[in-house]
Image (tube, rainbow, N blue to C red; front, side, top):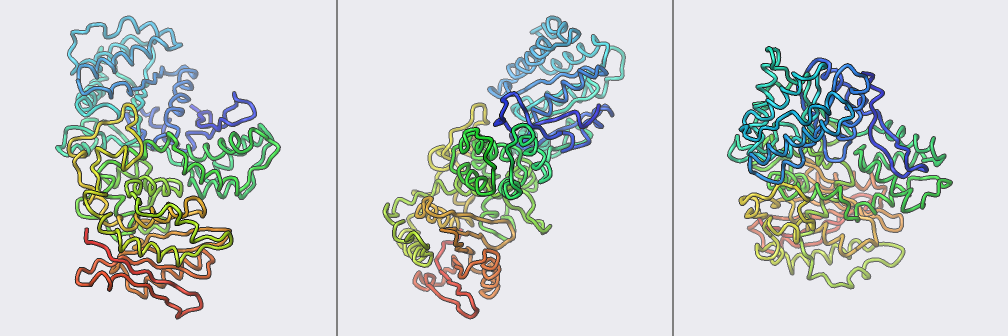
Length: 570
């Protein structure tokens, strides 16, 4: 099997709708074909819309075309609509039979009417025997790709994996043939499949009972070079060019997330240029579309919103958004791995071991989802006109207004009855999105969780984010940066080409001098002439007045404003 012949992903906004621009999928992970040739059973996991299914389509077609083996691709998505174990195995068996029937391979298609027609079989042997009968009947070895394997409900995943393991271990015995290679494909690694092995339901802890698994592979994001290649294929087909600045900005906004890379180009071609291929796509167009994408209720972000409802994810996001120097008590290594495998977080730049959102678009969307439950009803509707004059932004006046607003309404906003909603209201107050069809229902524990314990550190930061977003309301571009271990959350507002940098921190994380030095570094990176440090003080021995003040540090050439606000203990 030649690796470069397997290709995935496309920009659909091409001059010819039938054209598909592709990145060689196996260039993103060269080990897939090697694992198949070595008769391995393994896992491929990567975030939603990263090219998994397209990869399986291409792999299945290529294997069958080469003729050395048979390959069958089976989606298990339909099994997730019930917890009834017999129903689940009915769905899995019917999915296998359906794929056999629709196969363009006569040897496979002929099996459809023969395999697993005995409905009296108990589920505990059903899939094992079905696959064994298929392999015994075929003259070539069979390769099975189970797509969306991680959607199998917890009641069925252990019996399913146990049958696979039994078939694997006995496949060399007479009349007990079993697939040469089997691949479970989904968003998460098998250790995070929701099972009943552990009471908390977080993971199976190991790959058992699928301990025949040789390795877990993933599809990494595109490299910057691959973005050049992908966009270059559109240029070759349509003669519409991308500037180097456009590639740079696409890389900045997406960091190679495949769906985002495609969406930026596709939406510009479609919505901005109306398929006018004579116009060159530049960096400004990419920036504008990235911001439009953030504001749109894209289906791609539904899954992200659903994951942010999970307490195990919220505990991690709380520390990351606030820039805390460590995770809070109760965060498990499984939880951290789960968030990275879902594509929500990645290691921060610089190799510090810190975590940050996977790209600037996700970073912004995460904040908007988390802060959507922070209702700023007390902010006057006409307040935004006070701080912009068409030339500059009065950031000092705006932050003084925030400080006033915080003093007057902070207790109200922080009260359980006003802001700390339970997760069963997430679609209204917290995530703004209904559950996706087929998504796992929230458990009783999740529905009753108190978000006070989940968003304790980041609450102050999210309130400020929410305030700025609502007041400026598109009049200025608001960008946020945050990461575990940074001890700060960074905000920069851009208005009429001028940048206004803000650092946010919880008092005590760093000394005053360290805080001002970090602010100075941020000012320098923004090429700004002034900066603002917003400090939330949790010292309960101080009065509210003592914890609410405005200072100016003019010890250097650049003025730095220090906004002190009070904050309750988590």
